[in-house]
Image (tube, rainbow, N blue to C red; front, side, top):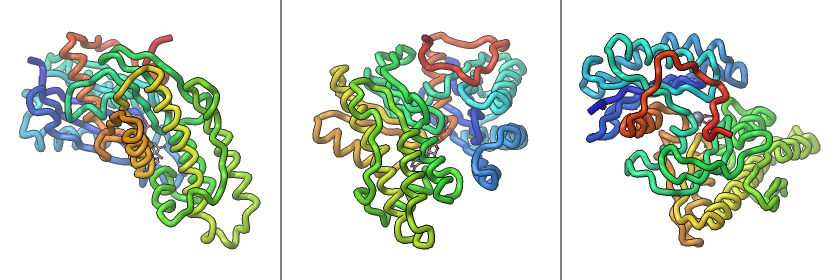
Amino acid sequence: MKTPLLALETSCDETAVAIWDDERGILASEISSQIPEHRPYGGVVPELASRNHVVRVRPLIESALEKAGMRLGDIGAFAATAGPGLASSLLIGNTVAKSLALAEKKPFIAVNHLEGHLLSPFLEDREVPPHVALVVSGGHTMLVKVNDVGDYQLLGRTLDDAAGEAFDKVGKMLGLPYPGGPEIEKVTKDGDATAFDFPRSMLDSGDFRFSFSGLKTSVLYTVEDLDQEKRNDWLADICASFQEAVVEVLMEKTFRAARKQDCKIIGVSGGVSCNGRLRDAFENGARRRGVEVRFAERALTTDNAAMIAFTAAKKLAAGETSPLAADVNPNLPLVSA
Ligand code: KG4
Ligand code: ZN
């Protein structure tokens, strides 16, 4: 019995700590967002992110332990995200988790951030069925066939921008605050998704690869031709039409992948899966096609440590631990080539 397990997530600009217990599930999930610190720069500033992780990580561990009603000595294993992400940010969570493991003489488990996202829709149930997974975050967009925990087959990924990156870049282009994804979604509430006919890149490519940079450029050219004085008249329509183009491609390709793999369960994870229009579209599409679509609860779609703790617990249960000398890897792949 190695749980309760304490996990740290510091791969980008969120400092997060969670405690998982094999019998009771998530006992604490603390997240400290750095969005206000990075907003003035329009994106994540790596040095600022790592310095903030240093300042925040200890109080966050203390508050997670308090919420779980535990002391450090009660923890049976320590985990941290080892990649992909910003090297200087990954190092903070890794070094803290390894130091705690060393001091407490407990195992350390390195977790792949993408695996954390991918398993997050199944955290409540704890069982991970074979399924087709769409991971849509700020850094990644990929379709994966999940045969079992740790047994993944990459079906396709984006050739250029990730879907979340496209949301963020379009948001910036439109003068919306960072991060663009949630800001665009807010604006779409009053928009007409059919007002602008943006490209659905690679929709009919016959494979499971994506491309979002052409869509982003198309929004740029469209906006440049519009009357900037009348921004309030077209902003919601641009945002809604852009969002629809992203959602349609993600949805179509995911359902096609599920059909090709003869899979009746789809898992959708990553920050973009917080998007209400995406969730509605997938749920309606799933109903029509007689498949089941699973999402993580909204708070666990963007970066969090609960998904890292859950993934670490699965590895631990399979007898997998990591050496304290293991390095972080900013480009850690989910599936080795
Ligand atoms: O998973 P995540 O927190 O970080 C990465 O691992 O990249 O995802 C962050 C991304 C950002 O690009 C953000 O704009 C996007 O998720 N995002 C959204 C929404 N909420 C977050 N995109 C569209 N609609 C949203 N509601
Ligand atoms: Zn993430």
